[in-house]
Length: 173
Image (cartoon, rainbow, N blue to C red; front, side, top):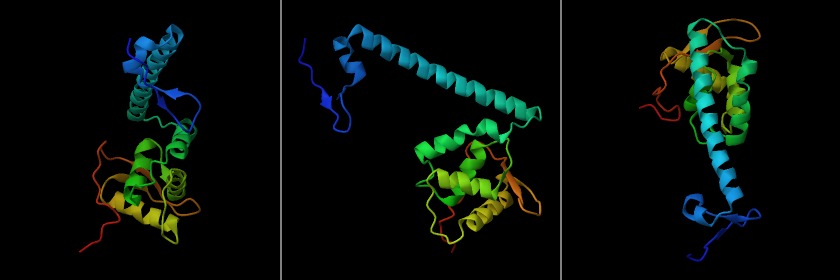
């Protein structure tokens, strides 16, 4: 048996090893745990796909889920910061896409992109989000229901899965 060559992780306690190449050296309990973890990851993926399929079917049937059901996106945004390196246009479009079936105000979109790590140099980020949402609506990538009052317009995603939008940071010539 070749000598064990472990990689030492300096940020945590323990040893980091490449599971596939060293599984001949692992304890049977560790092998079982890793196998079970892998099975659960596959199950999580299948459940996620099933939920997405059901959500689309419900939407086609005219049933809109309440925002409380989609609150999981907020924690995902908070943990992964997906908007950190995105343009404002891309961030707004992703929020609308992630909340497909829900109508969001510009304040809600602004909140989600802020939670997701978007950094703005604008003095009035909410106004920038509003302008971006209007541009998306004008280009046909989101729907807008116009309203006056405290909440204002509400926006929802209507584009395809791979929407192409000009980067809002690009300069016009």
